[in-house]
Image 1 (cartoon, one colour):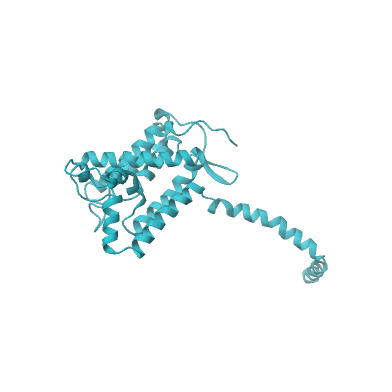
Image 2: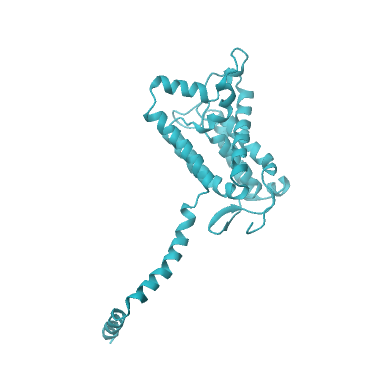
Length: 259
């Protein structure tokens, strides 16, 4: 009996006009598209920063000679010793405190930073807009190297990486309580910036802050892992984080749903 009903149903479906099937497909396609959209819907400014960082690393790795690579690092990385007074303030000394954030040491360093940039940068960029995102990137990059410089004024080691700016985004995210909502299929931090007292009363936020600071302090005393001691600029991370945590109010205004 069940087999005969199944055959009758299949026969009925085979006799449906083609346009009925097409309408069904067209109705289902937007649903599938909407379900896929949030995965790939990164803000344009975040995509731009990822493209710049990746593009620069590819050019350095593939096209530059060793001498050109050395020149690039000496010019565009942040080198504390350059500001000791023993050297002239040249072009590299002026741009280095910002351009260092677009350079990375290796593919792993680049990949990890770009993943965190996509995760924290997307809702943050959707919240404050592209122009303020760029200003925030510059401000937190400067804050990151500022703290690094205070603690390593005579260090000749070049500092590179977007970690300071990304740490700033993490600090800003904490002031939103890490609460992300979706408007039109995109992640976004909504609502006013929370007061420091409110933030510190959240167990989730305090746990994140504690773990984040412990990881960076452990890195500071040389337990980052085999072969990487001294390679993690924990001071820059903390400098960027503090700038984002305390300075987010300068970049984010109240935003209503749908604005």
